[in-house]
Image (cartoon, rainbow, N blue to C red; front, side, top):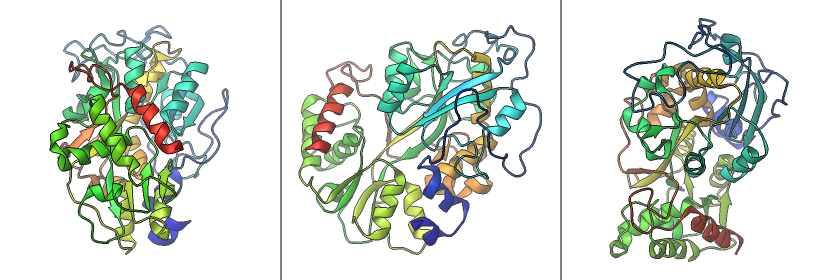
Length: 420
């Protein structure tokens, strides 16, 4: 594949070529998800959240009893007894069980340590597909993108999290734990997993700034309604009279202006990408001159000796993936064990190296994840400067009052743009 030739056969190249694409079959219900071997050197110590006889199906301390920015002052003693099974729904590439590569598997260690078998691991490419799966299936844990997370919390479809039952919760930086996209009515509903930022990567030519993405061609832009926020962020600098202060909280007039900017050079020379591998291929082949991409993509080109540039620390948008427990989870105890596992430094190290996204737990920034953390500046756990993290756009301006465009308006305008 292109990146294998560019960056060699290291873990980083492997992650970009295959991991984010989410290739490989998914386990069917009733079949152990960990079909591949465990990663080399995986310890087999005592699992987190050791059962202490709490009745099956009822976590010790009901979810939400002590939700908040840190561990409860009166923590529940432990997670209840394992129900034996877990059903997982995530975006492509965010969970690997050995199906894409036998050497990349952080599901099997979870099963071995907890006694919870992942009997369903469904992976989708978009929040829209994930919403459809949730409507038609039953899951215990889900890792939704921010726009879907907001809808699930508002509709009561995910439960508040008892953070006292998540042993590594305190290791996650406070700024991540406090992101509005993970909280609803002052209660924690999402435990941070991975995070990333969007930035403009170009072919090394002379461009004035991120606004070149909308003034040049050919270019590649992420096929997501929230990409409107990146155009709005450009307008915040180039047209201050519009009054854009938060690119995810736009008035109808500001939304119109952002979509108009996107539409100015729309045409056959623009690629709307769904899979990160698509944008890397487009840049590597010279098909596009500029692209909305990730810091990890720019780093791959730099390490491969290919011409590529970014616009430094210009204001950017970002997002945080999280894990949530569904309100009707059949296996809440296994769900809490999953939250403990996926926020551990070991699992986070695998996930970050495979996806090219920064781990929520800075303790993971060693070994195979070291370079990923370096390009995100996440080793010290500090919040990146000039990054606006995504939240589901809402008519009440995400609870701030006022009149903003609802996410449904964003989706409608985006579909008109892409299909036009």
